[in-house]
Each structure stands twice: as C-alpha cells, then as structure tokens.
Image 1 (tube, rainbow, N blue to C red):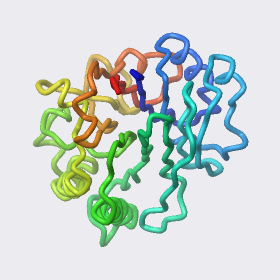
Image 2 (image 1 turned 45 degrees about the horizontal axis):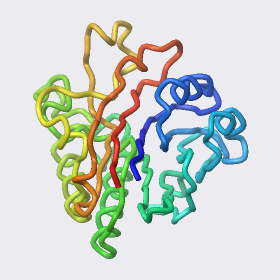
Image 3 (image 1 turned 180 degrees about the horizontal axis):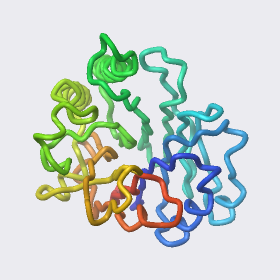
Image 4 (image 1 turned 60 degrees about the horizontal axis):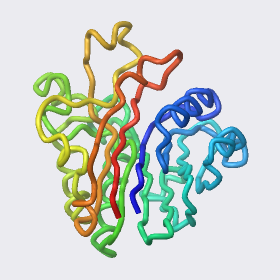
Length: 262
C-alpha cells in the first residue's frame, strides 16, 4: 500500500480551517498530521474534513494551546498518547494504520526565548521533554513506525538561514541539537526528509515578524518526518510546500510531505 503523509503546524485548526480544506483539496495526502491545533477535540471542525474523505481522526486537544490531530482517509486506530515531562500538555498522539504502521505525531515545546534553563523554565521543559522521548524509545524500540511533527529544532547547519548567528537562538543551540540527536538515535529514526533531500538549505518555518518573509528567507527546518529503519527505505518524494506559507492569513509553518510504498 502506498500512502502520502503530511505534517503541518497549523497554529489554530479552527482559525485556519479554510486553509486546511484548501490544502486537502489541492494535495490530497492520505494522512495529515496537525500540530498546535489550539482546540479541544470536540471543537475540531471535522465535518468539512470528512466531506473530503478524511473520515478518521485521532487527536489530543486542549483549549487555546498545543493540541495534535491525525486526519486520515485510511482507517486508523488510536495507539497511545504520551505526556512527556509530565507537563499536562496535549503534545503527542499515535495512530496505527491497518497495515501495522504506527504514526507518532509530536509537538515538542518551543522553549521560550532564552536558551538557559536556570532563567527560562520553558527551555528546561523542552529539554526534559526530549529526554523523556529519548528514554521512551530506549525502553521500547519502535518498529514499523513514522514520527512526524513540529519538533521545534533545526538540527543541521543548512536547516537554518545562518548557522553562526543562530547558535545562541532557541531552536538551533548545540544543547538542543544534541538532545534531538540523542532522541533520534534512541529510536534509530531515519530523517526521511534529508534522506530524500540531502543537500542545500531547507526550511519549513518563517517568522511572522518578517514582513517580507519570502525575500528575506530567514527560515528554519523545524518540521520533520522520520521513520524506523525497517520502513525508511520505502519513503520517497519528500517535499516542503513553501508556497503555502504565502497563503492568506497563513500559519508560520509550511507543510512537509513524504510518500511511503508499503
């Protein structure tokens, strides 16, 4: 079975329902993983999604903050939701397709403005969240799994617009990059996007603070698609839909897609 999967930090699924519908009509992925839904599950506007064939959903939500959802044309059963670092946040949902593939959808904490846990509690929460993810993957090695989401870290030098200038900026600091690397290694996860697009600058997020984001192009690759080694070779056709960032009243993130032949 071949299926295309997309991940997108939507920054309010209710506020941007029309953008989600447009994306589903134009790209028609089989599975769409959303982060930062900012909605209780019962308030997610599922009727329009279902009218386009996305009749299945697993989700975790909370009012006004966080929230993750997996919309699917394919039957999908909930396969768990972890509260890493015991923050009480809706930041993870897992679903299992009928072919046995488990999809993990994560929204890792952004980490605030200062990369110092002594003065910034949010940065400490981010590091603790990643440590808990790492420990969970060590404790139970994932198999036949895909991990996607806004991981809020751009790990490579060419995942940011200026490596040297961002070394002390949250999302690209060495301690975050190392924490993400440890988490990835714990699950033996393969970075599908970079396996497909190994060279060159690649971004999925551009700040709202930049009025001419496209020309300035001060982006970061914060959104990721990983897969376990037993299925990573089945992935192909990775892409970032940069133009979606230019839609009217957009999210500051662009969707990232990959296709799996399984």
